[in-house]
Image (cartoon, rainbow, N blue to C red):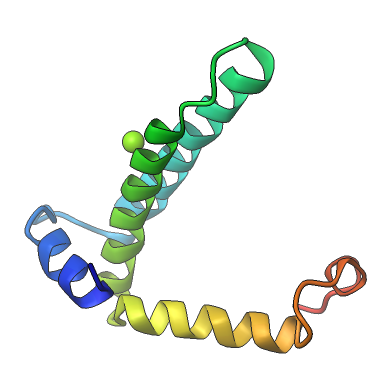
Length: 104
Ligand SMILES: [Mg+2]
């Protein structure tokens, strides 16, 4: 599935009262759910539930798509801008030195 198709299908479940605040809280909540699965694996002896992690990534994607819609940009634009930033920050690929001394 590409970004355009995802966005079309995601919008179907967007509530009428959607807002940037809902997106901010939703991203935080779903990221917390992702972190909780990792925490349970590392500290509570649970097997790493990769299927559940993938499900939570999907929930995070839903909120990213919703945020993009509210900000008036496409998911493709969000992805493209992120890659452009990373190419500028790490022109030769990831470099720990550039990470430690990175500029905003
Ligand atoms: Mg979730």
